[in-house]
Image (cartoon, rainbow, N blue to C red; front, side):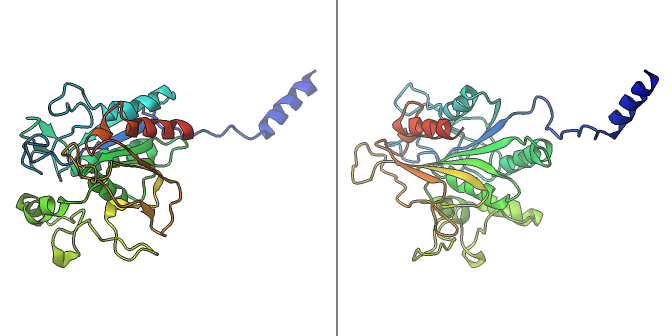
Length: 298
């Protein structure tokens, strides 16, 4: 019997020790959704009568449509589908501005690109880097917000973005808002000697519009029409054509998304019947398509 016990001990000593798994901290979210709102409407006939970009605010979370009592709840729709699929989710709301500012529309402090970048760096450091089960990151963006979200993805190739949801990506007026008429943004970087997240002056290479060359296409593309390689799936929603001018909100994304190599690998496009603002509504055809695409892949 004593020999048998020694044999068991020796055999146990020869077995490899169980490896310790490197899992992210308990309580950290499975999915992080970062929502980038766009430009507030600057004409009273179509919206808020605001002063963009200084009054831009995060409307994807709880914005109420002008002349309506129905919340958009764009973010709630995307967060909700991941929760229905069994994931824990954290949401971060971003306005279309370089840094945190007080919007004259929302009358509250609105996080901007720099706050989003700081948040993403913390997510990467605490919940992604080196873990077997990293937190997944999803970009949700509308209109001008797609430019800011694209800058975030291009500037952080170390992060994988599982989905980039482009809701009617628009570059029109972005340069005017953020390059030519906004000395606050330029002074912010110049005074601190910081590297800008995008070139602000034409002699520095132009802004994020028409800056990326794609093989097979004749001209340079808008930054938000070229999906970076660290994005897994691109879901592109396009509002109805401006040829249909009713209602007044006729802004429209007319450029399809491509990869850097000119392909459309894992890029999916939906032509909506809704206008530029309505594609963000919780019950819209556009958001139902987004939800269906996520459900089909997760």
